[in-house]
Length: 124
Image 1 (tube, rainbow, N blue to C red):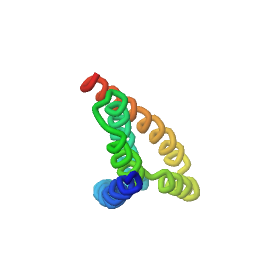
Image 2: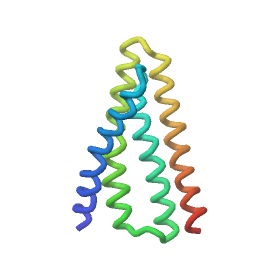
Image 3: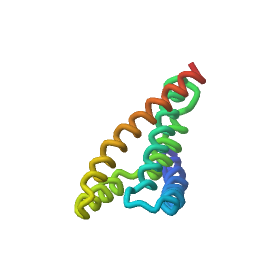
Image 4: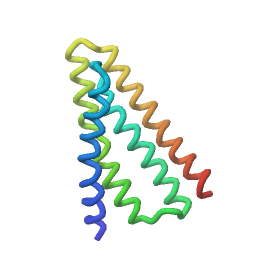
């Protein structure tokens, strides 16, 4: 049953990633990969919120499999982040490549911490 929860979550997360990426990137006429940045930060927030809820006993391990492993696993993308960063560097946009790495790390960790804090405020 666990694998089915992961599959169902992934089936929702993958198209959500694609649609969100296209929606965001279309609105920014920039070289910076705003779409990937957005889905990764959103995924970090959701995962932080979910983790806080599980720790507080407000969400089950099934929810963690469905939303954490499945949805967030398919929504977020380390491979695309890596590829886009490498592409920026190869195209001579080294500052944007470095900014993507630093901003993604800081915003992702920050979003996870905020998600956890929100969960603690709600359920603890």
